[in-house]
Amino acid sequence: MTENTIKTVKVKDITNECKGVKTIYFNMKEGNQGRYNIPKAGQFVMVWVPGVDEVPMSLSSYDDKGNWAITVKDVGECTNAIHNLKIGDFIGIRGPLGNNFILPNDSSKKLILIGGGIGMAPLKCLSLEIMRKNSKFTIIEGAKIGEEIMFINDFQSLDHEYSEIIYSTDDGSYGLKGFASETFESLVKNYSKSEIHNLTAYTCGPEKMIFKVFQICERYSIKLQASLERIMRCGCGLCGLCAVDPLGLLVCKDGPVFDSKNLRQMDDFGKYKRDFSGKKIPLD
Image (cartoon, rainbow, N blue to C red; front, top):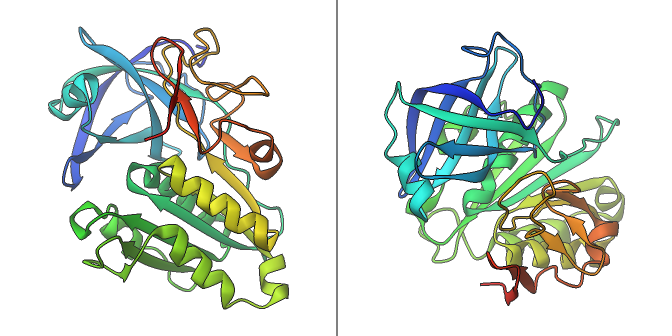
């Protein structure tokens, strides 16, 4: 089976993460004769709901037993159909697709994960990979209001000898008051030059937030890997809806994770995306 073969899986469990967000669990071994490709943090899958549509979703967790999870915000017809799934229902999964976050070989590096909203899904997956390497890391999770903070129980269970979890909300109703990017810069300002030199940052969330994180990383010469989101129909480079100018890179094939070098050359980054017709439109 290839990554682009649709595999039918049964919903094993469903968790309500916060208002309008659910995590759907399924097993890739069952019903597929155990044949599937092991994913990496940052990759995504195309999720097919029979009779409705197919949409891209980042993986929020996986393990060596074939248990995968997607975390879904109810924002449209297909995501609403996913939210209405029950345990025992079937969906189609195509993937894992795209590239992934890359961790430093040096376990002494300090890693900072900055996310907002549903962008926390691939960062949660990344945090689990980091834990396996016993590397030190900080998670900064941002949301508009406290009711939109995700994965609180999951992050509380992390080994705090290696990790630090910081929450921020726009209105200050949970954790620090302010944007995740502002919390990130406040943290960096308190580091020495040698500590900053030892940092690697990872981010996912609203692109305007990602762009602000990128600007901070550029000011302090911090290496960054960012997971971008674009409309895509195919997930395999055919439709072209996720093309980013002027490089012509495709988020589905060349991404969704891009490093600082590529981000510097993207005129669209932080400014434009494409609609379902392929027309460029300003980011929300």
